[in-house]
Image (tube, rainbow, N blue to C red):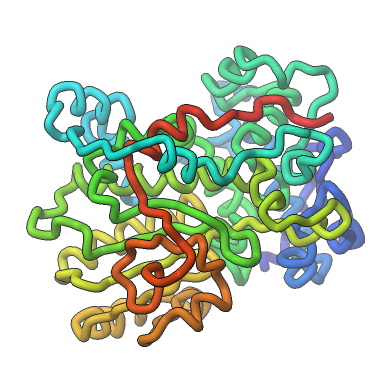
Length: 439
């Protein structure tokens, strides 16, 4: 940690920021404003040096997003010295034709065959997609109440006000700053997730981490992941190889990747790769809404006293590689997508269960794992046949797709769920959206 952190002069007192970590005691106390204390902060922020590092990052992020230019120099340039650089892939991500949402929708309009698919939806299949209804009783919606910073004048209930804030993320008023963070689920403990994901040993400077947080917000502003719909990613989603469904026994949402369903004879070019990334962003955004609208604690059946301090915030992956024809090029593309996910959604993946691993995949993993940290390698669990015992220790089998090509998993369990794109689209259009935040 940089030695000059102790001499840093804070630009704000942060008394108007409801979840500002002003002391170690606050971080280590289970409160409605600090729901992750048991499973994150209490374990890792144990020294005043780390606390000050986090405080400086929060202070810098606020300054860059709210300060007016000084002599023509923006606060961003003053603090970070360069224009926002999302990462090395930004030229592709922000390509107007293949990266941004408007280009994707234009392509779908001009190439209607790309979005053709067999709609097998019916009333029963749509109902299965609606298993995770949000808790509309806001007095019991603990996640919604606990995670968000909140405003007291009621303006946050005005969608037009929120839309206006998101038109420009710099030179914000204090109210707009708090509202913007709230709208993207970025509490102060969320900023710590970013710190831990990008720099777990806090070896870089607070300025560097603050820049990455701001760049992440800039990415959201331009890329608009929260506005993506299933209709936008039909070309990627119609084979049914990638979808989110269910919760594990800790309440973490799950994503399934069934690689054998992919048409791997078709080369995964830049457009297809970026569409797959947006497809995953859609799953992640939907999952984040689920975590914060009360669905998870509804499933867990916990009351407020049980739930505080152990709120789920990460995702469990189930990856089946059976019948997958893997190549070095394909693995590179998959790694590219996961690198992007790790940058824009840091610390969102809890564990990855990988099954039906062919010998080729084992060889590729031996190469790829050399470029991962030990902490990253530990997230991957390679399961041998049979898998059901290991999976059932972590996942309720009723949430395992009944048609998955996994020996002993899915088939023969109580699950009768099969992912159907038509059902998912119609269910998402029916699912209520909680727009009012608790005071």
